[in-house]
Image 1: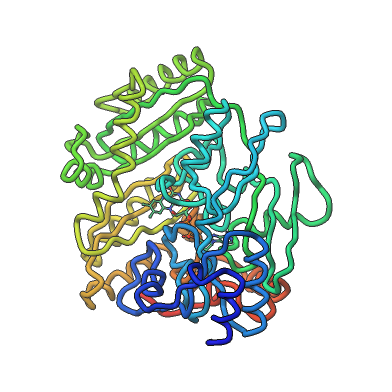
Image 2: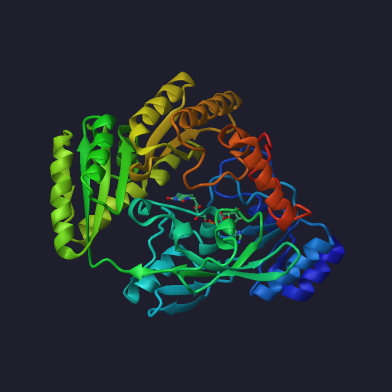
Length: 464
Ligand SMILES: Cc1cc2nc3c(=O)[nH]c(=O)nc-3n(C[C@H](O)[C@H](O)[C@H](O)COP(=O)(O)OP(=O)(O)OC[C@H]3O[C@@H](n4cnc5c(N)ncnc54)[C@H](O)[C@@H]3O)c2cc1C
């Protein structure tokens, strides 16, 4: 370890190699609530260039040391946890927007760029980068690519994967490769770019990305509609979609979520109602007006008792503030909050919500239910105390049943948060054996010594 540290310091300088216990302690966590077990990295490095990333990986290969890439550490699947120790590679200092190319509608960025900053810069140029994980104020482009992050706007615009045209990747042995490029069409061999998207830092480290941009929508309007039942809210979602209207977002909150937001961040939500939908429409001014009117009519058809339509940016921001406060509000209910991420076919949302409620009641757990209804992506947020062994045991059983239910309803284990370490034990329930074998073979090809973010996706660590 001493030799490795000395070599790392000669490449990165003393300030960019951290070994003090208190520094390493900060990197034993990400945003996932994992209980008491501490996974300390041995070293933390903060590279400034692709050459440095490459040199670090060559050294890690030589010393057989794991390397875990890290952006803002906000993932919710334990994807940044150094389960086997090793080197945390914190990429936040590689945070330059290298190019915004208006002619080709793309940009070139380093992995540490914060998603909201990218959105602001491209919007100043009249362009748009739609992927918007709810915590985009802090999450990085590198982390979002490695998780294929989504967010509220996926229903209309797709997830991060739909915007990645090309990547510069450093492989486990330090080799630098480039995949894809600046063209929208590219059928030159296998699509390695998309193989890396969503691979959770297990196949290589992204040091640069070419991202597709689209023209910024001219106008937008936000509506919030309150319903007397989850079923009616979900049916309104189907009604809107089957009327061939394509809103940018269709966000669902249940009664308990609204009550919790009102408790800690009051914004005037109708806590006497069972559910609400936050719906944003965007596009040409005239079409936005027409679509907002059509959506109001459809919501009324499904018993929406109160529909509020934003008249200006301030009112739109206020509605979004309520939705984006949900996680923070639930976090105030108890010492820990665990956000699960199930995805089901859209028309199975009422059934999935029913399952979550049944399971929470059975195991006496507190769950606020919210999600991206347009994508069938439901996030039950469980408030609990991980020091309470009995509660943890009940929670583990509940999560087993929750994912059984999602799979039974034709859904999957994750819509956007990934598998990481927390869901690896369910992988065999969702994929056939041969598919898992093929995925493991790919890992073996790219990372024969299993040094890049080891024990993620495929292995169960018995945590929580
Ligand atoms: C309050 C809250 C709300 C959230 N809302 C959403 C949401 O709406 N939609 C959504 O999809 N997610 C959401 N998330 C989950 C998470 O924030 C996103 O997945 C996020 O984009 C991760 O970015 P990050 O920079 O924090 O990545 P990190 O957590 O640092 O890393 C995530 C993964 O990417 C890998 N990685 C990081 N950088 C690189 C790189 N340069 N090269 C290779 N691998 C790399 C890491 O090893 C790890 O496996 C939310 C999280 C929180 C806490």
